[in-house]
Image 1 (cartoon, rainbow, N blue to C red):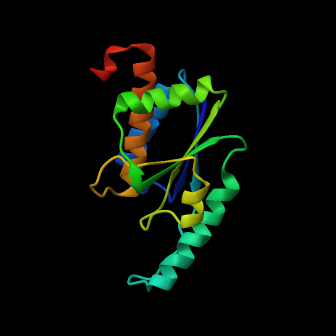
Image 2 (image 1 turned 45 degrees about the vertical axis):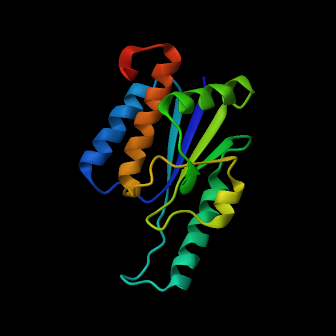
Length: 160
């Protein structure tokens, strides 16, 4: 069974987002081994200077790099990543498994994204849209897409 880790900066603050994540975690129980690791967000002032943002990204990035599971395929979710369909996403997960990569790790940054060191560490960079989404909502979106990918793999009607 494929092991999927989601490393994300920050905690879910809204109950409705936590409920949605819990629902997809429940649905994924029999389809993969799922682990979500929350990295504390670096505290910034209300109007941070660019240097303060860079420092926060580097601190968060160091914590992310430390938590990446050994031998995992690493996928950074970032605006400059490549977009793909749900079917292609499902094939990507299947291809990792076929290639012997039974561990996949997704990286979700905080409100300022991911630092360059984390992006360089990634095996692949993905973007879901040119639109901007709150990183907390994106966690729900990623879980749904992982669930959809596993349903596509099974030939389920969920994807239709």
